[in-house]
Length: 621
Ligand code: SF4
Image 1 (cartoon, rainbow, N blue to C red):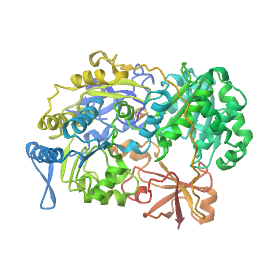
Image 2 (image 1 turned 90 degrees about the vertical axis):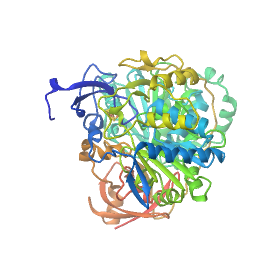
Image 3 (image 1 turned 180 degrees about the horizontal axis):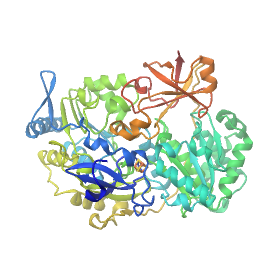
Image 4 (image 1 turned 30 degrees about the horizontal axis):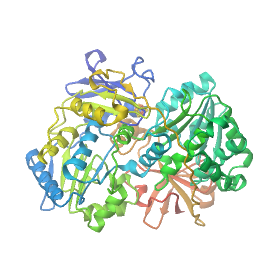
C-alpha cells in the first residue's frame, strides 16, 4: 500500500460485508482508507479476515462513489443541493402520508446500522403511516428468522459463533461457509482439524467443506429439504433416540409426533435422492453427539417456504434435545453484515403491510406510488429483473440512496449519496447475536451524508423529533426491543456485547411441497460466488480479482451431454427471460442442476429467475 504502517491513523471497526461480524482495523491517511490489517488480538477470529474483509475495502475510496444529490429534470439526473433534494422528497412523503400512508413503500438494505434501520422503520411506521417496508432478505433470511421466532421465541439463532468450537458434531446445511462466511469456514476447519469435531453436510451441492477430514456429505435433490429433515426427526422419534421423555414435554409434541406418522422413510429417501440407511445413520450420529450444532444459511430459505424450513430444522434439534446448552443449537447465517439486526428490529412488513415482492407488484398495479429504496439494488439482486424494472418504471416517484449509481439508482427520480461504513458511527449485529460498534475513520466522500442523517432529517420534516445521534437511537432500541434491553451503547467498547436469549421451544409440524420437475431442463440454484457478498463486493478489487464475472456451473455429465467445455458460452432460458454465461465444469453439483452467482449486473442471472422454490431452465449452446 501507499504508506508505511506506522504513519497511518488506525481505526478499529467491524467488517461491512457478511454477517460474521469480523473486527478489523482500518489504516487511514489524508482521509483515505489505505489498508485493513490483520490484528491477532481482534475478535473471536484472532484477527483473521477473508479476501472481502482484507482486500474489499477499496469501494470506500472508489472513483465511482456518488458525491452529490441528483434530481431528475427533463428526463435527466442532474446535481442539486441537499435542500432541494430533501425538500422534494419531504413534500412527496407528506402527500403520501395525507393519502393514508399505504401508497408509500420502502426497501432498505440490512447493510445499514441498527440505528439507521430503526429510524427508517420509525419514518415509515410512525411518521408516514405505512407498514410497507422490507428488504431482499424478505425473500429468504427474514422467513427463516420469522420461522425461528415461532419455533424458539426469538428471530435469531438459538446458538452463538463460539458453539462451533464447543460442539462435538457440526451438521452444516446447504452452505459452503468458506464461500458465504469465510471466517466461519476457517472456524469449522479449526474445529474439525484441531479438535476432531465430526462434520456432517446436507446440501444440494458439494462445497469445499466436504474435503475436510472425516466429513460425510449427504447430497439431496433441490427443493426436498423439508422432507429430509422430517425424515431425520422421524428416525429420532420412532427409535426413541436422545431423551424422549424430555422431548415429550415440549409444547406441540403430540401433534408433531402424529404428523410424522404420515412420513415414509423410503419415500422421503427416494424424493431426496439418498438411501434410508443414510438418513438413519445421519440421525443416529446427530443424536449420539453430546453437543451437536446445526449451521444453516439464509440462502437456504426459498421464497414461500423459508419459515417451514426453519421449523423443520429446529424441530429436529428440539426432539433430539440439542437446543439450550453450549455447543448445541442452530446457528442461522444471515448473509449481510446486519441481517441479524434487521431481523431483531423487525424491518419487515407488519399488520397488512406489503413484503418486498408485494411492494413491487403494488408499483405495477398502481397501489404503490412512491418507492423509497435505501441501499438495495433490486434490479440486479432480486428475482425476475424484467418485472423489477417494470415495477420501478411504473412507480410515480422513486427515491434511491446509495454509495453508487446502481442500475436501480439510474432509474430513480431522486438519488442521494450516502456514507460508507468507514464514514459513520453506529452498531451492527452479527449472526452470533454480537452487537458491535463501527467507527468513523474518514470524512464523508464529497457531499455524502449518512443514512442516519437523511432519515433523521426526513423524520423531523414529517413532524417527528430529531435524534442527537446513534447513541440516543440505540437507547430507544434498548427500551423497545427486549433482547437489546441490557445493552448500553457507550459500554460496547471494542468487543461488543452478545445478547442473551432464553429459547421458548415449540414443535411445529410442516410438510414439504413436491417441486414440479420439468423434463429436459436443469434445476437452477443461485447463490454467492467465492469472495462476493451482495452487489457491494463488485466495487472491491480483491473480490473482483478472485471472481470478476458471472458464470454457469455445470456437472461434468451435463456438460458432456450438452457438448460444452470450460469457458464456452451457454444460454440459460426460463419463462421470464434468458442469459448467456460462460460455463464452469466441475463435480460440485450433482447432474441435473446448474448454479449461477447472482451478484453481477451484466448478464445477470436474475434475467431468468422468477422467485419459485425450484426453478427449471433449459440450457443450450
Ligand atoms: Fe468480513 Fe465476513 Fe470475511 Fe469476516 S468473513 S472478513 S465479516 S466478509
